[in-house]
Image (cartoon, rainbow, N blue to C red; front, side):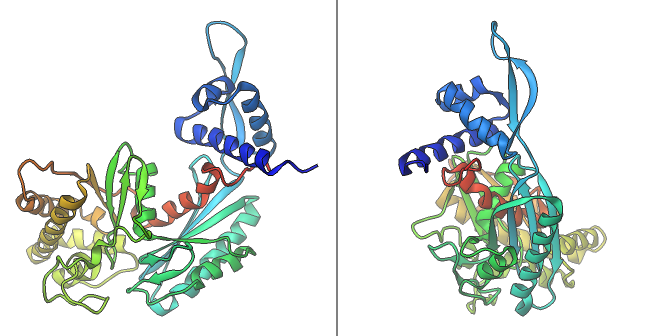
Length: 392
């Protein structure tokens, strides 16, 4: 006999609470999980039995949970079987990351894209490649999300505006659905929001309560985290800082206007400033620029020029959002102090009031795959947010 709807919903919420506890607070005995979550010990025991049955939870070690009584088995999330698929579609490349419930990366793929018109086709190809890998590895994909540099409609599937890709509609979500044999399961997210999630849980943003993550590709976007949660705005469009008119007034932007911030600090702006050609990925390009800057003062001056515009824009964004930490992702990270130095100096000089606390600038730790990794976190999100019971 099927469970009543209310009982099923409660079971799912309780299972999600157990999984969240193990993922974010670490391994624990059943008694410790009960204390963390506020659930009855008997309820935790029932939930854990179901999760063990589907391979989501495993015993870690024998530990004593108190001064008296039998040792309690310590439990942990079992990496491997259930996975979330994260993909990214960007101007120069497509990427995929497969993440298991324990937060371990099981598989990763990055493919350069030579023609922006082929991005959607390239994304579909990578999705099919990941689906084939999952079958061969015995992994069970429980969801997928695609990170895109642009605005996503409220249905979390429709690309509303992405000026550098010139793609709209549900085509990307549909293509990934088809690769896995699904219907209407794939979600689409802003790439900066995904990058922020990745750096928060896996990279330079760990431990931050208030963090601003800045992408560093052809486009510039921001993901804002407040007390561990993404701030998305009324319609999910928050963070579209790349098209704020705070760049060089006559710099042409891919959106068709001039003066946008990304027209002065995006990857193409950097290449124009240093007089170099683009390589396969933003990371590779930035590494080449960094090497050239160590020998060529003109290249170093070009990076400094971009860094100053970066710092000037960060001062504006800081005045509005007041972040504790700013993580510079994408191509900014390989440039290191070459970009941090001038950006920090300009930020200090441009903040409106001395009483404003200057946010800590950190270099992103995850490279090109940050948005895909964050998309994989998003794909697993329903497991931890009451929507999906793996023991169902």
